[in-house]
Image (cartoon, rainbow, N blue to C red; front, side, top):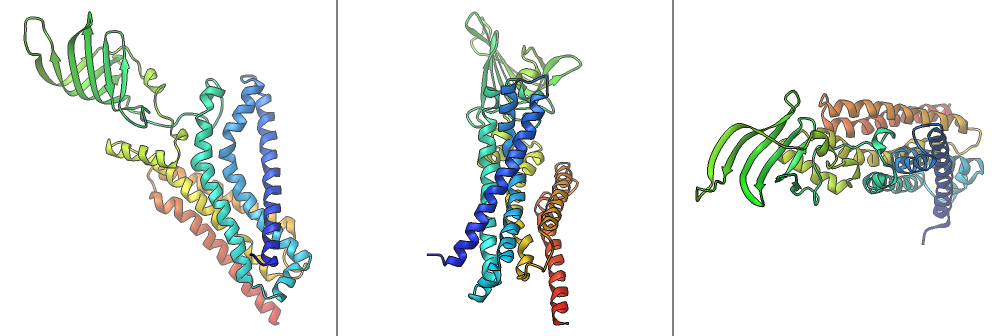
Length: 376
């Protein structure tokens, strides 16, 4: 059983957390729906589903803000009702109160992790059903991927007019099919088999070119197929690059574990997986930073008198301003890591740690100054 003093702090924190979450979520839904209704290119139903599908993206930032607000409002309520002083007189230490707030922040960090890792991808899978042509009309719903998705990254088989073919993956940036096997037939009989490491689309010639492969020709008067090795060979495929884009995997629909498998497959194929590594570690670093945010309001534990410290509006405003500054800086760091201008781990994990060390240093200096003033 938890002591009554602990239950009081947890009750206050939980109440303020859900109040802040409800208010910020309501602001998001009302503003997003209003913006959607004012657009002529979408219907009211599409505007509603577009708001619902994009909610996990904004919920990530809402959880960070509510984490800070819940801790600040809890400590202010305890201070203003003289309950903080009463807790100290009952033997509850600052270390214990700090531990409770940090423990609650761990819970928010877990919610952040579940939101970005599972809730967001599960909703993104519904977008094609709920909204047609969503990527061209809604931000945050566009596809992001380079490989096709077949039975969680197995080979893809397609049947065309007079041939079957299979390939391991399609790289949209270079417009290239990898590990391709082509089976041509005529009157239900096999005529040719072509195996190639790559088939590249040439936009000027508007045709496909097979690279480094083998061709087997099956002729009527010959018992065995005629084998021909080649470096380059033109291939008459009826499909266009746009056809392959329609079957590519969307990395936004992959949960954390599927995204990790996706990255490993990219690396195995010697493809650049930096963008998706950034996406993977961004989920982990966001949850980690959400946990660290619980440290920001702990400086209020030094002020037991309601007349001490700063006003609530100034505390909330300055905290949210710092959080907004972090989001801007984070977006810049993410772009730098995607372009490999800075190391991935140092950028995505060093930023939250450095930010919290900076705020911790400021709080420590303020604590030292207030201690000296009290002695004087």
